[in-house]
Length: 169
Image (cartoon, rainbow, N blue to C red; front, side):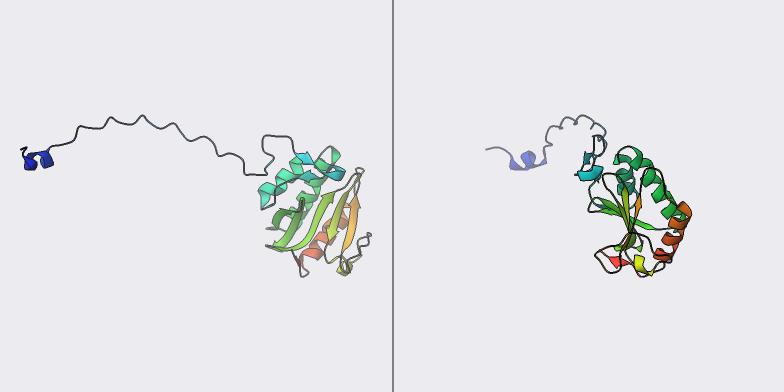
């Protein structure tokens, strides 16, 4: 019969060391992201971008906008950002939204076939009122075409709109 005491105290043979792990690969883009691939353009050339909050999804939307719309979206975003420091941003329903608090928005825009439609969610309270009418009681629109828009008036509307109660979405 074997000595059970010495069998219990005997050391097991040393395990060979595992090979060093390779550095982790860069994180893959989040599902629905257009990073590293051509964006899907919906009707009117509006980019299909995964919903999300913050600067990243907003800039992804702008970068995916085709042709002249990309520069115009970049200009709209720059005016909004400089007029309302600390503005909240999100992409929902394939459109950038802007607000003074999360999920409470005062404006947004959407690429159409021949223009970009800017929505002022409390637009009937702006002076002067933006020109585009809506079926929704408080909403007014500004259609921005390739040849430009009145940036000074747009900034004034943004400043006013940011001080009004926003729309929850």
